[in-house]
Image (tube, rainbow, N blue to C red; front, top):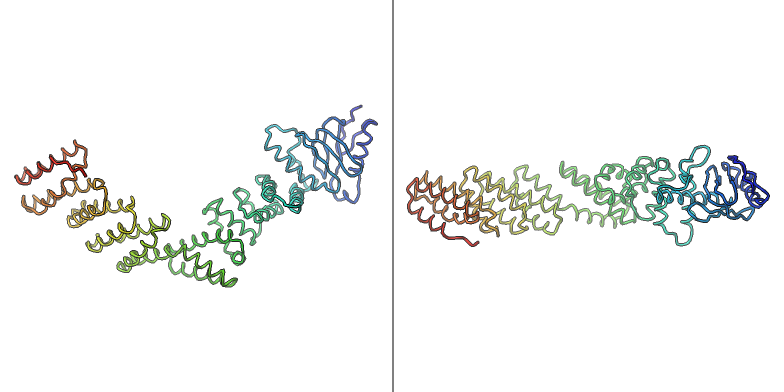
Length: 491
């Protein structure tokens, strides 16, 4: 058999032994009703057992071996992956779509595929149609079949999600939106979602997809699109897809919380407007949405009101509401518990700053009775205690000492503060009232905290106390100190 001379865009001459194949080729390349609107189609071959190219609608499909044909309709070949193919002029679009997907998977699996499989590089308008035209036709054909695997179809469609010629192609992006919603699945590929968001007109479908994608891309991404989502909120309200509504709710809550931080009036206006919008479409759905929304935001709204009361000096009202709120948030997430505790400790600091020890003590007791002994609580307690010692406020310091004894299971965690209180009591006691000062009685009561220190540090601190008492000839106090220093507090 003689090898034909290569003539692009035309059929090659072959020997008489290829008569049957030529018959297929001549029909495949002939003009007619099925091919009149198409770019050039046909075959370029070298020999029956050698590789070549099938030209379909302007795309060059590489083959390894022509197998057989059944003129005038059916053509068979084997590609370089060993896969057998058949196609006809009537299903040329479907075949091309299938082969585009096959070629893309081949490229993904093989670092060095056979030449010609990067079919996307052959797109050259107006010489040929966009690859998405054929891919969508093929995937829609699969969707119309019995028991289609919609997840697999979506995966095949997303094979091209990082290709620039697809990210600007409206029909492809619309198809992705439709498929994703039919699979009730958001887009995790940020580049693809950006393309959908930037290149498609606003619509209910687009908004639904953005909301479903919220879980994948996170709150920060979707918050940038909130205004766009609200623009189509009317159609979202009617959506029966609970995943969409559940995805929308965190966005509404977030917008509301942001408003609470700036203006209670604006936040309440937003809340009422939202429920008014819901009621326009379904009274039943509005009631459910309102319960859901209020269930997620009541604590936040109450906290915003409390913070406003503190800012405006209405401390009694703030304390009353905080006393209820700290109980209500006991089973809430950590963020709201921490925020509530933060507001409560702000109120405690105000009471101490104004010398209202009674209300301060009441708040601290309530905090420790109705919340875990968290690092947040212990940290705030220590900061207030340290501030009182630094300012020399012995009345506050002794109250905090008593509270610490009652509330803290680990007394040694406060030993540094207790020892500092002893230092302050001895200094002020002997300077102001001498050896009989009641402050020295209190100091002796607190001195055992020194045993929380390592032996060397404890001895050094006892030595400092002893030196100051000797300086003022407080013999009885020195005797008591010596007795204490010989007793190890096992606690």
